[in-house]
Amino acid sequence: MTENTSLINRKSGNTRPLLMLGVDGVIALEQAATLPTVSEHVTASGKWSREVLVPVGTKELIAELTESYDIVWVSEWGANAHVAFAGVLGLPPKPWPYLPAQFNKLSRIQRFAGSRPWIWIDDPLVDLDPLPADPQGLVLRVDPARGLVGLGKAVFWKLTDNNPDTDLR
Amino acid sequence: MSEALEEKIDTGTGYGLKPNGPLRHLAEVGPGTPYGEVLRRYWHPVGRSSDATSRPRKIKLLGEELILFRTRKDGTAALLHPRCVHRGASLFYGAVEDDGIRCCYHGWVFSPEGQCLEQPCEPGLGLHREKVRQPWYPLQERYGLIWAYMGPPELKPLLPRYDPFENIPDGHHLMVNDAGVGGGGPADLDFNWLQHWENVMDPFHVPILHARFSGEQFTAEMALMPEVAYEYTSNGVRSTQLRVLDESRVLRRVTEVMFPNIRVVPSPKLSEGTTNMIGWVVPGDDTNFRIFTVAVSEDPEFLSKLRSTHGGKPWATLSEDEHQRMPGDYEAQKSQGNVSFHADDHLSTTDQGVAMIRRMMAKQIRAVEAGSDPAGIIRDAESETVSITGGNFLVPTTSSGT
Image (cartoon, rainbow over all chains, first blue to last red; front, top):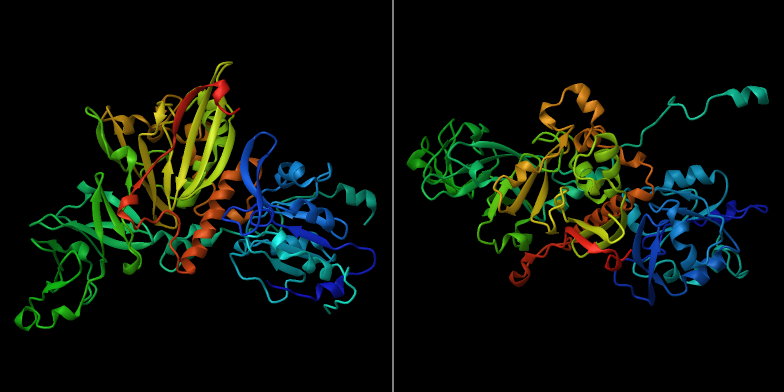
């Protein structure tokens, strides 16, 4: 896991942090998963379909995260991330923003976020090039056999200051 | 600046455009490049068996210049680096002899495995000749092709067999074509290989490029927009395309890419059943590749007849004006650039298959970097035959999965 905890210092006022989410390896697992998953049939408005493995608990975790973050899809799934997973994850009808990026996503995330604080959660596979020492936000990498759920809620409690005993600064 | 004036200012112009460039990790093939090292874990076709003769032939493969020849005595095909280890003269000018090739400069002779057999100017014809070795690569011949392995010797896998070519029915012929079947252009394709390979997982371009733009290049059925199911397989990515032909019939067309560079594309002219042909997209370097295609058919001219036409004319006879009015795969893919600026792509709904290939490529890079075998490597002789699922299937609507 790569962490830059300076993000917390940038969280200010009533501006909610952005949570930049990859899809493959994060929401949809492709390989032998090491936690319980459900096979889901997802489709992009009928143009194409895929069977993907979604870890049990992803829907609930996403719902919790929306209480503290504004979620942005950052994935080659593009606009279809919201379309395809709306039913599986119980997503709101109004799609979340998306950045259609597959590899080396950092510069697009930085441009999109501007001065807003952000956390980026993704499969390490997306980093074809190494990340800079200070990505100007918090970068979390999942185990692609466990996805977002595999990070554990404790990580998010820390990041959202829901746990007042934790001081990441 | 006033608000009214700001509203009049153009946005989105090309001024100050800063392209992000290619995904070099995936596109480049030379020694030491990420995907170049993946490619070097597999066997690749370097030419037709008939290309190896007693006349040395220049070959470029994965960014390396090589010399292909066949010894006179026992007909062993050989692939050596061209630069003679003595003082660098090219073996392209060498003479092929019974057991190897003789350099034109000082006559050193090298076997197909690079051993120096003779140094005629040296005392005793080279008392220390066993101390030098001309760099070489192992070859095998199968299906009318010569295959080379250019990777770490200790990791050399088995050369796979493919089920369409293992039991050839009576009256059918095994045939090889290196003239760019599926490339839609010349035999030597002059752009990055990945632009062609990933096109295999893009069935949505067919009704546009090959029908709406250029007339019906294949068949009327192929001009229909498909619904597609994508899936990863153990050795690549598969797309299953459904085209509703009428109330009772659906065309179920299955295409595959298999790692590291194989295209399983059934005839776009819709021969029914499991495909009878497989293609290998073989990079010469980063901006040149060839397509080697093997097929089984009753018609010995099957592969040459497969080439699409543009307004009824073969690609090679088109004028510049016709190329522009009736573009095909070559025009589309070549115009993406010598090496496409993938990082500037705006991946959309129709690019799911392309994205899946790129992701699986990145996985193979990681696997090789970690010392593991990439997808599709075969080491067990009992598993050496690869099953192909690609094909064209006419099915009743009720069983198509629509």
